[in-house]
Image (cartoon, rainbow, N blue to C red; front, side, top):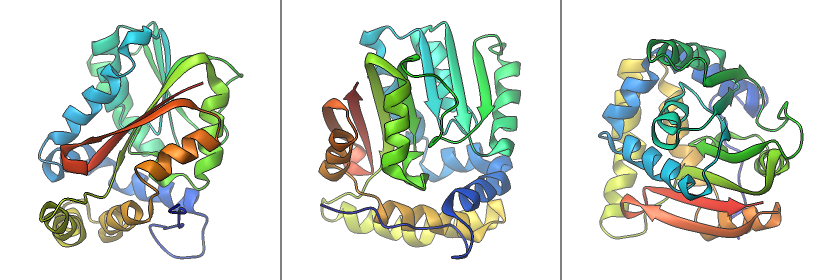
Length: 244
């Protein structure tokens, strides 16, 4: 099994959690635009698929972990009509961008954003009907601990949906993808976000992440059932699902 190797955005000194928070605080003003450009808009399609994967459960109280600028939280309200979505993230600057978007859309009575740690969630056991994470688990300092915390706050029978980048295996798409991710994307990121290491970290963290069957096994090990992995867009991204 592919064991997660710790990859940090910056120096070896500070804990990964602190470095990830610093990185996202720095790139927050550019994050949404870069996401659309660098993924050619496909990231919006992936998010919709993740949200619709929990629709049959009719969840009313939903937690969005590593919510960032609240794209998933906003789309969840649009697609699922829940009573409340709580988004949590360690980057306050990202949350500030998200709060402005939420207010502009008039959703501030339904969506609440909180600064907090995914590995120490400030909620009681068995609170949420569903938990979503889009492109966040790769950034956890302790992957298993983060997954266990999400499992703890899920109600029995509650659904977890995780979107995360994965490594394509199909030739020649694998080679094209690696070239884009390793060289072109960091160059665009460096020129636009003024943080050259942020998008280099994106490539390195994807390479180190235990994707596919390995991640499904980690879900199993951390207490989830009915676990499954669905590759999206030739395996650039994967949608993982599990139940408490």
